[in-house]
Length: 117
Length: 114
Image 1 (spheres, helix red, strand yellow):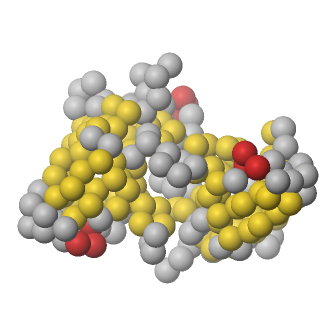
Image 2 (tube, rainbow over the protein chains, first blue to last red):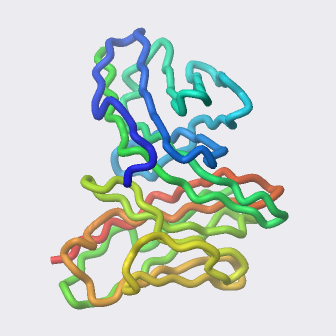
């Protein structure tokens, strides 16, 4: 059962354009939604994250839009640059909120983004 | 601060052998999680450790095991290797609890089973 569905699988965007990656989840108990960026030969790097009580979060050129009723969230990369070419993963988790709480990430399948010069 | 480190970076093993991978978390991080990354299945959660105790486990066979030491360093072991175990094994550390839930990944260990 795939709990987080990510689309598209691959995306080609021209330099300066907007890259949009979408994710949908099923489990309404998820309460933390991070995005990770992974370059070849590297581990995933945390890019930006959002909680469901916020509809949008922006950090530089990266914006997460969150639609709780539709159980969907998306990553927008404004003014896309060739250096943004990487694989992007959305994830969702349930945070166990205790003093030593934790979260376990459920990942989407990833989107390979290529920004052409 | 130094990031998450994993050793070795690359490993080639034969079917039936066993392997041990090591992970050193970011200083001050007490939670360590392990993930398997393959082209077909993507990133899948293996297990999570905190204070030397496994708190959560993914849907993997018992051949996959792990442990955490008192300094928060962690190891994972795969016994009786199968071809399908070829993957990138990623370790992620987190401060845990009030320190934050963000997970920071290491570069991974690329395991090839022949």
